[in-house]
Figure 1 (cartoon, rainbow, N blue to C red):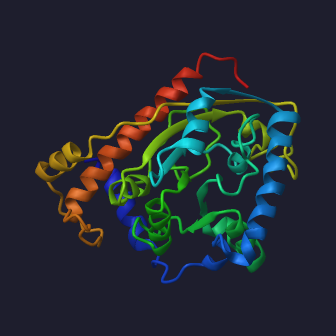
Figure 2 (cartoon, rainbow, N blue to C red):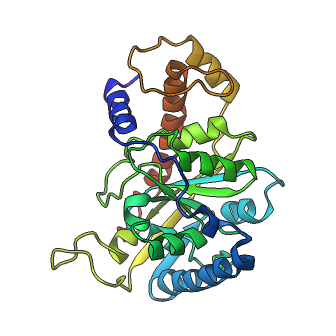
Amino acid sequence: MDSTQLMEDEDEDHEHEHDHGRKMEWAGSETHLGGIPRKIAFMAIGSLSKLLASSLNSTSVQNPQTLLHLVRSRPPGVPLITVANHISVLDDPLIWGFPGFPSMDSNLGRWVLAAKDICFTNNFSSYFFRIGKCIPITRGGGIYQEHMNEALEKLDTGAWLHIFPEGIVSQEDAPIRRLKWGTASLIVRAKIKPIVLPIFHRGFEQVMPQSAPYGRRPLLPLCNKKIKIIVGEPIEFNLPKMRQMATTSQSHSTSLGWPTAPDGLDEATQTCLYSTISDQIRTAMESLRALGGNDERV
């Protein structure tokens, strides 16, 4: 177990108080006003995403059929988790704006974990992001914060959840950062094992750079950039074997204050298990990054 990772996650768990309620959850319900606000939001944002990704910029996608099949035709009740690197504030929704993707279909659209301190700062933005199927997450609030439980409930209904597991935007051309354990915890805690699909992309950091030539983020997305998206294959997890290995591994003495998991996993076993799963996801994402590494920089 990486002691640095353990201490970082411990600090995050104790730095913030957990949410005791779900911010404006009612607006995210598919029955809210007959689902009309959600449909309008997806039509508007989906159209804008296609304009920016497919018309004003150039997007190429490798292996799109795997993503399209899982979004449209995975077995009923089986949840889908997509994971991707995070290189700009517009990664979602622009990543779904490539030709042929049903980005304007609110029924097929993803749920996504979104930073509460950025996307949910007032009632207007909270409502907007909620009808756009966003779940507010307090960065540093820990894997058992109430909105993570909400995300788990979505998975248990067979929904699609998109996650940026690095937890932060980074526009450096560098290896995938250490992943937060939230994604792994959802995989383990879900009633039905989710399909986990890795995605790597580059180019959005030029569409919306963190620091433009004038020293700050541009007011509007930039055009005439090349975007590349690489969709991997579902990651295979042998969860029974991973659980057994985590149970027999040497435990640690640091306490994060986590409850015992429903399947009886104590805190020490959970940290070992989540670390192992996160490493496997990171390896898959890094393999996709390597596939795009020999391409001309976009």
